[in-house]
Length: 72
Image 1 (cartoon, helix red, strand yellow):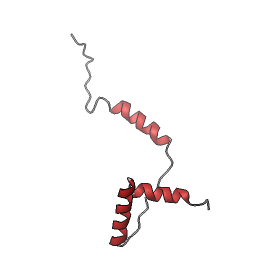
Image 2 (cartoon, rainbow, N blue to C red; image 1 turned 90 degrees about the vertical axis):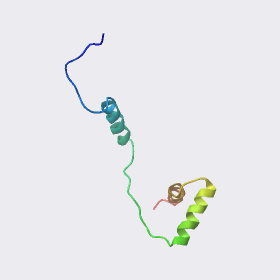
Image 3 (cartoon, rainbow, N blue to C red; image 1 turned 180 degrees about the horizontal axis):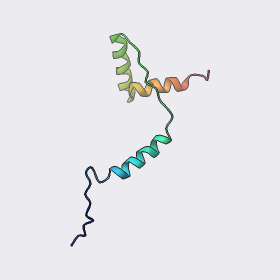
Image 4 (spheres, rainbow, N blue to C red; image 1 turned 30 degrees about the horizontal axis):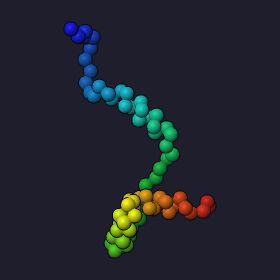
């Protein structure tokens, strides 16, 4: 027979364990910022098609480009 503790709690049983792991993983990451800019529709399509042919995302391509820039 199972033993009962007398207290009940709501929520997912794994919530406590996963929140600690999430907080720990956030401590190792550098701060990020969101970058937004406008492109003409044709330029956006060209970029998306190029990324798809390379098997990458637009984010991957732009991040690689920024990483390749010389230090300021």
